[in-house]
Image (tube, rainbow, N blue to C red; front, side):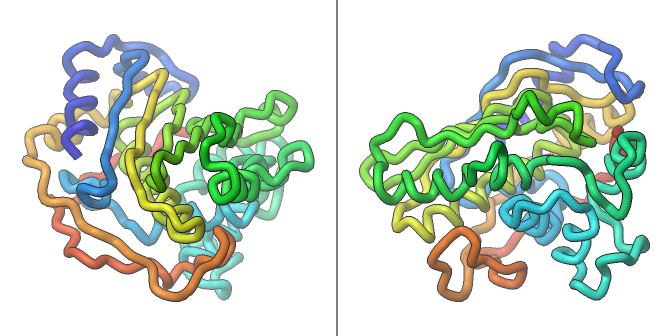
Length: 279
């Protein structure tokens, strides 16, 4: 995870203070790229603990096409907790602070990521990605675009990870993600792990092998109320990366379940660091 830690250091040293939508304030830089070779291990943050089950649940929620916070809760905690407000999700803030202002009720967030991945303008973009990797791996058009201008004002949160560009070379699958806005303390470890999981899943069902995961980011920022935690985090030495696998037999990207993911190498990490999410 050295590229991630180096980016945090870059922001601490070179970032400028700015106001932001949430009112919290950020220290930010613009236009950065970090790369992870998934053949070297699974890029799960080791300088603090990240709950991989929460990452995986959110990813499965995106894949399902859902835009309902309660459906994410059910994926993470079990279907019996669909309406149980004591079981928290990372989308609770966006629902309570933004979705309700748009008039949404019963957990609906508007046409956010899952909807754009599976239903935007009547197109199942994720299924198209899987089909192209299988049938036309030399294509330069294996693209998934979550930034739908017609829906932006209807979303409780416009997409931060906007664009996926998939690439196959000699049976090795790589992915470049464009991130327009990147909360580096809370968001980045989640995003990196999520897209690494998606790469492993897509490789599993298309008969390819995982290669590089690349993030090209616009506004890279640390919220001002996270500076103390980030300063602590960059002082910690990154540890050996874990390895992951899936149990079961999955034929398409829709076949994965919450209990399929397993660690095949121990997840070693420094103590947890927490911070409030700005929404």
